Length: 110
Image (cartoon, rainbow, N blue to C red; front, side, top):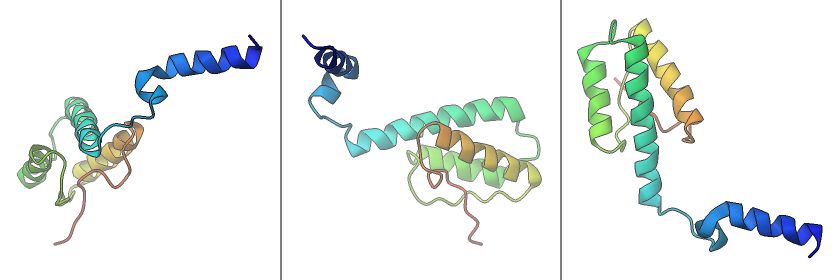
């Protein structure tokens, strides 16, 4: 067996059965996975930064976003410097978790 054939076989084996069969996660499953990753990042961020300086409106709106399975509307408006700092951290964390920068719920429409 040639070196290239062995390498291709190794890559196929490492990719796992789903990749070998060309299966991708269902869109609903990916949304749930993104939401779970985002929720874990949120929980960790709250532990690190605490809720000091975060308004009840901000926390309630964010909890509603999580309760909806991270679905629209995206209407969590950071108003204080602490809320804005946390929102910025969460956008970066969300992107690091494999979601788009538009996934987090932060928007000010009022």
